[in-house]
Image (tube, rainbow, N blue to C red; front, top):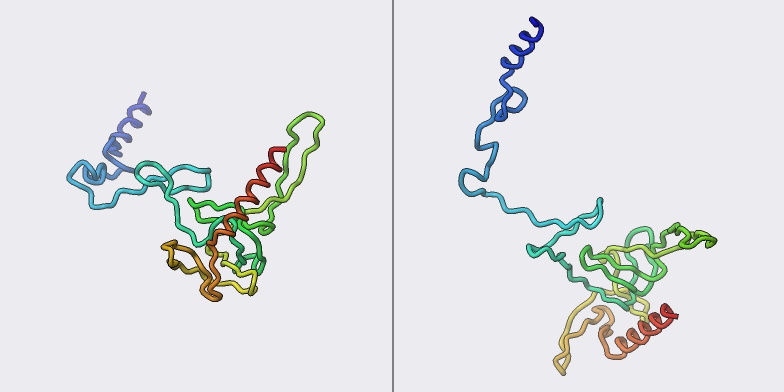
Length: 192
């Protein structure tokens, strides 16, 4: 009984309450800064959870922020930095939310696939990993030189991209037709 009374008196001497932290009393302003007047801090951006280790910045309406990039699907690019430096390939896919691109036959990763059905063996396959768009540069196949991209307006009022070093126009009608035909062939091959 005496031990219990000693324990209670030691707790009261600590003065731990709902408004205290480790024995020190906290002021009401530090407890809730938004209760007394407006806060001077900017509200934080809404962050959407993509994966455990990766966060996506979002607009106030919860849609992801999409970044503008200097490359498009179908462009021929040269990797200018990283492990795959110097490789040339065509862009097959772009991710605007984190400014990354997938270049054909570069940045290959090994993926271990489980068997989907009984009796079917598992596989080890190679897939292309994403590269940040700042690590690739547009490439001219005709003159074999990488170049930065520029924008200009043609006589008919069409805004196109062109290579600054060579003056070669990237966004031409023939290039788009080739890209659409290649996309249709890929879809037909995937369907069959």
